[in-house]
Image (cartoon, rainbow, N blue to C red):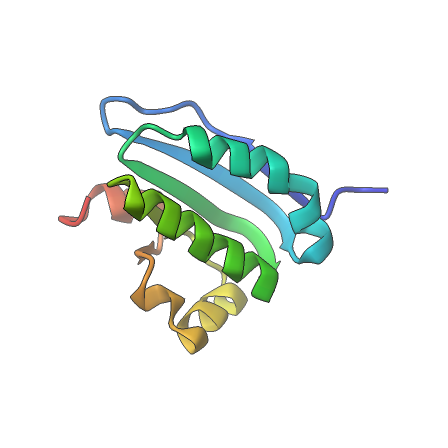
Length: 120
């Protein structure tokens, strides 16, 4: 059986004070179950300023995935860090817009757009 969701932790960029996590697949109940422990432990230990979730290869996200994103966002904010999401496809972007996630978590079209932004 193939995994529904794969994550890849890219090397931390200490000069930019950030780290990127690539997501590939579907962030639904099955996908979330596959990555929950690994991602939760990573977020708890995260010490840089910005955690970037790259959703360029993410095909779908459901309410469970959105709920987890909000937990990550809250956890990071409480520790004076932030979650940023980049590279949403049209479907995921529509979901983010419809439920207002884009008003809470910074969303950028690409990692370069975030790196070039003043809100970094």
